[in-house]
Length: 88
Image (tube, rainbow, N blue to C red; front, side):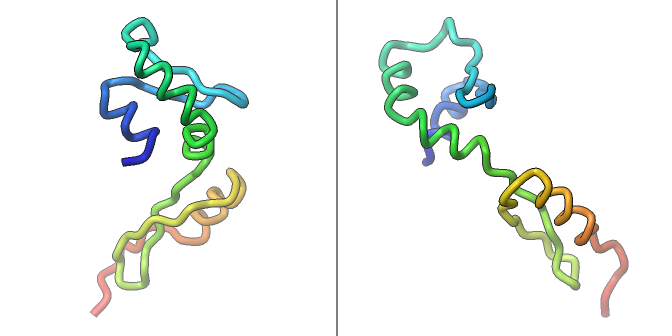
């Protein structure tokens, strides 16, 4: 399990805030969790920066694509709208 998913699984919401992150409710963090966050800070920020877009095959099967930027994510979404027409 990734560091980001691990802290989310512990019941915390974590969001990107500039070049760091914000966690809530921070008052419920244990000392061990605080140390974990310090240790994996760079990994967590990297994970938060990844934008995943759901794309579709010509037959309508969904798959995830990691966008390299917000602009790339927008382009992927525009160029690959959900396939709604049945294919035989």
